[in-house]
Image (cartoon, rainbow, N blue to C red):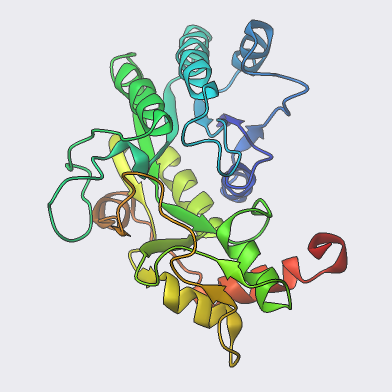
Length: 285
C-alpha cells in the first residue's frame, strides 16, 4: 500500500508517518515547499503521489491562533479540493485528522464524550474541521475522522502548555495557567500517531475519538512536572478561552474495540521524555 500523509513533518504528522512505515506502508509525505496545499499546484502535486490512502493532518496549528484563525476557512476549501483530486487519481480511503473542537462544548451530558455527542463547534477551527468532515462523508470514498483530543510530548511547539511547564520547573519564571481543576485527556503524541495510523489501516469508518482515556487535572500535571518542588505556576492566572469547558474527555470505546488500538505509553514516560527533550540547551534557549 502507498499512503499520502499531509502535514507529515508536524507534531502529530511525523508520528503518523513513523507508525505507517513501521506497518510496512510506503509513505509519501511532501514538505510544504514541495506541495503547499493552500495553492492549487500544491494540491495537484500531492494528489499525483499515486496513493491509495490519504491521511490529512495538515492544518493551521499555531498556538493561541489556530482556534480563531481566518486560515481555517482556506484549509476547509483546500481539504475538499485535495480529496477530490485524490479520488480522481484513484484514491480509495481518506482519513481526516479532526478535533474534539467539533463537538458541542456546552452540552450538559456527563462523563466522557462519545462520537454520538452533538457537534456544535464554538470556534472557527472546530467549525472548519466539521465542515470538511461533513463534505468528506459524502465524497464516495471509505472515510474516517480521527477526532484527536490532547496529544502531548516530543516536538511540541515551545509555546504549548507542557513545554512551558517544563521550562518553568527548570527555573523559569512562575507561569500563569488556567484553573487547577481544568481536566483533560492527555495522550502521548507517539500513541496518538499510532492510533491514527491504526484507524487509517482499518476498515472502520465514521468519527473515532483519539485519546488515552485517562483524565488528568492541571494541578496533577503541574505537580508531576515539578517533582518534589512546589509547582511553579499561578493557577487561575490565565482565563480559559470563551466557551472552553473545564473537563474534556473522550470515550475511546470505538478506538479500543473496533480499531483494536490501546495506548501503550504512560504519562510518566511522556513527561520524562519531554523533559529530556526540552532541557537540552539548544531547545531551552
